[in-house]
Image 1 (spheres, rainbow over the protein chains, first blue to last red):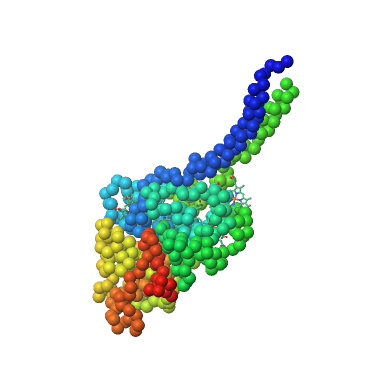
Image 2 (cartoon, rainbow over the protein chains, first blue to last red):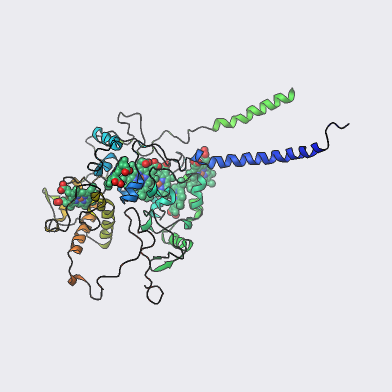
Length: 231
Length: 218
């Protein structure tokens, strides 16, 4: 006795296959969600006590990163400037601006301004700025076009795959040390060649290979071993 | 019924790994630099040294090196020999910390001055040209009038490198044609830059010079 029509066979088959695809899709969606700005907060500006603009201070005024982030070359921590650094200029500039009142209040009372962290790795990861700076990794390789950010956001996901993408082949990103703080650095190309130590480069990978040698980078196995970052 | 219980048991078992979804390892009970602390009244985790104590390496015994003063008057010698590296370092540090107001030339027309900060005097006046080296160091260390102290941002050795560079800048702005080495063309050809002439206080990157035959000059 046949209860179901023949056509239901196809429906049954379709549901079986369909559920496999559905599961695969859900898995894929989960993975994408895990990498999306909802989880990593990439490209999401955080509220700050003062709407400090890197676009104005770096792009328009031309301040160097080290004017404020003084320890970035020497220590693991880049440093956030104390109120005194802002008052170097704002003791005379934009004196009456209500926007700057928290800075002046902090200067008067001696209480620190409380900035919200933007780039924040989990505490089980070790990160060090000085080695990256001294081996020729530019700020904007990791932090994006800071000189065009009215409010700070993080460019990268800061996930492990992002760190490893570079650690597996630093030659893709490395640049001459003198250009680390240049937010508008362009890698050499056919139309914009670059001269370094008397050699003319037209390709990032060629330049990268030479710099990796010149700056004595350790082997890839060394810097991708778990204990480099999880110590 | 049997089956249902089995499934329920498996379901509960599947929930166990969820217990691992905690943030303890992400937020460990230690401070990252400059993190906020709710233990101290001023909310700072970074502490000042206890009054009357000196941290290792911070006993500033060599007073000329740390003040630029000899018996309260600015001295006129460098505490270490000036090499090309020291001058290069001085130029770099000058470009970072001083150019916003004093400009790369040292004439006092920096960007911040154009936005309304008090204009500092040019370095190329007779008074500052004849000022002793220690004077510049003292201005950076202690501040001077409207100019804030830079002792916090620039370590002592770098401040001395800046002093050496300022003196070189003063000499260069006062140079005569007799100082030009023979064979050097003046004015030299205008440089060409790759792309944007840099941003921040970084030096722009030069376009490699192509000579007439189309090849590369070296």
